[in-house]
Length: 209
Image (cartoon, rainbow, N blue to C red; front, top):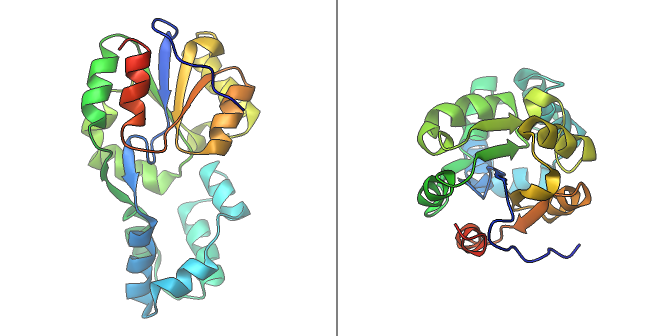
C-alpha cells in the first residue's frame, strides 16, 4: 500500500513501535546465550526457531512466560532452565536506536507521543526498567500482552486509536514491519515504514517538527 507524503501540521498524535524503532533488537544475542547454556551451536537454534502460534499467544498474554519457555524447550530440543531462557530472551535488547531519544524529546514538545508494541510480559518487565529514560517520552505505551491484541490485526489498531482519542487519519504510526504498516494504513492511520536510523527524523521533519 502506498504511503501518502507527510505534510506539516497533518498529525495530532505520533505512535511508535518499540523494536527497531525506539529500541535496537539483536536476536543473535538471544540464540548465542541459549546455545551457551545448552552447549550447542547458535546456528542449530536459529534453524529450529520460528515465530509460531505459541509466540503469538505469548504476545497476546494468553500463555505465561513459563509455558512459552516450556514450548521452546521442546521445539528447540534444549534442556535449559526457565532462568536461562529468560536471560537469553531479554538479551535481545541492544540499546536505543541512534538519536531516537533526541527526536522523541523534540517531537514531544509539539505533539503527544504514544507507543504500541507486540511484546510479552518478560520483555515488558525488562525494558520498562532498563530503558525507563527513553520510554518516559511516551504518554502511554500500548502492549499486546496487556490489551490481548497484536499487530497487524485490525482490532489492535482500532483499540489503540480509540484509546488515543483522535481520528486515525491524524495519527502517524512508525513501525519497522511492512505487514504492520499495511495493517495500520488499512485502518486509516498515516504510516512510516522505518527501515533505517534516519527515517524517524526525516518523517518528523516532513511533519514540520
